[in-house]
Image (cartoon, rainbow, N blue to C red):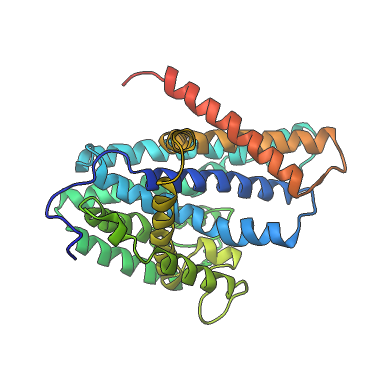
Length: 357
């Protein structure tokens, strides 16, 4: 491949990565808003459901995790000890997210006589995406400590993925075991885990492997030459599998979380096409939207944390004060944009005033 240099040529921020991550967090907020709206009265069009819940929602988390792997390659702080430290930080942030996503809505629901679900602290330990990211960072740091190459790490991730594809939907008939093993394999979906390590480790590791080449690309027009093919074929695969089939079941809600090896590969192919699309549009976009995407990308973790506090609170109060309110395409769109704005402001404020290390 004559468009790959022997040394790093792409350093600093890459516009296509920033745009992809920004689009992922925007659409993830839409999807999470739909999730909470579905607990109430919801009436959205089939097209809205198809685009957001059955197409965009599937790729958002893989984009985050894949770009996380690429980011490790581009970061100056990718020594094993710093990766482990970052992993622990993400674990703690993940538990903090679960307070806003799981604990507070239930407590608030009881206070407003809107919920009869028992109040417990167990949901604090549910494996959401940031907790998975923390476990993944820690494991990558440990593997780097023992000088495991990117190629061997990728083989390990594929083995994990194959195991996770078959060892899932496991119920140990013990809630504590379900929570513990949910960090590694698919146990009780949504209650105990949504991002088990074995199913999802392939994304950050594939991102590391991809990034080790991407950082040396000297001709992106050649690197992304076939981006429409990489984008369109996986999308056709996804749309043809809106119900589980032997060919793949990525559009099945459960399998979108306990993702199979085949579906993970489809997502990775699609991500390359998406990055190619983002690179091409970045050449024509003016500075204002580019700067906006860059800002969202820089603060993606803070925005993710904030939206899991704002969405449950906002949706609960709508349901309480406007009984019988029906969530439609337009109302969900307006609410999602509002959540995006206030979550971004919260992330910016935190970044400005957070304690220095």
